[in-house]
Image 1 (cartoon, rainbow, N blue to C red):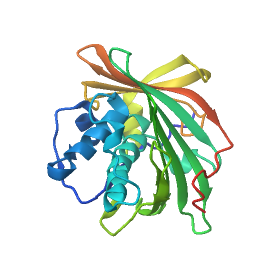
Image 2 (image 1 turned 60 degrees about the vertical axis):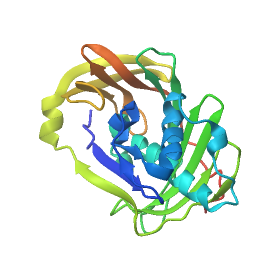
Image 3 (image 1 turned 30 degrees about the vertical axis):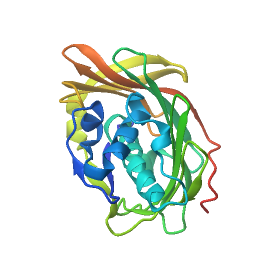
Image 4 (image 1 turned 180 degrees about the horizontal axis):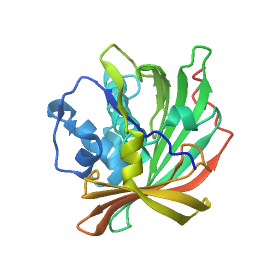
Length: 265
């Protein structure tokens, strides 16, 4: 089985708000939330995962200047989780245009579930990538399509749809950055390899390679189950804290028919 390069892609979509540390689990996932006037926006972004903070009616009207900023902050959370933490995969190598994967993310008590879907829509003539990300929790669904520079990881264009169905182009400037952080070395992956394990998921049963690192996001141990059988290679991701599961992502479905839903190209 080919050991995939694990690429950490950290997105920092900067709107008109600043970032600060917060005590929620999102702080463990993406390293911060917004402060000051953007506090409600940051709280709603957290609610997209854990459904406990700001309500949907805090979304600014689509005709207001605040809509684009709000959607950019939401994108910061969704892109960061999708291409970092539990979704660490060498996406450029392991997805072909049209391929998509869907994961269910659960917290320690299992009562809160978020669905995350990622699909590679298109590879342009110069190699840039159109990605589609869908993040669903309760009645709220956030949909984004972004054009990413394959060489730098920079977001070049971004379109989004809020839970009310409002769709539009989101401003992207030189300070709106999707930054590639680097790759785990092959030696590091070999050192973290625990062994092979068959994993049963809603998407099927897969023979995987299990990897374990100390110091997971929001816990003390990070575990990954990888296979070449599915796009992206990830079957399951889990963070353990003091011997107990803190949160887990599990593959529930995948396919090959991803197409743009926002008329992005």
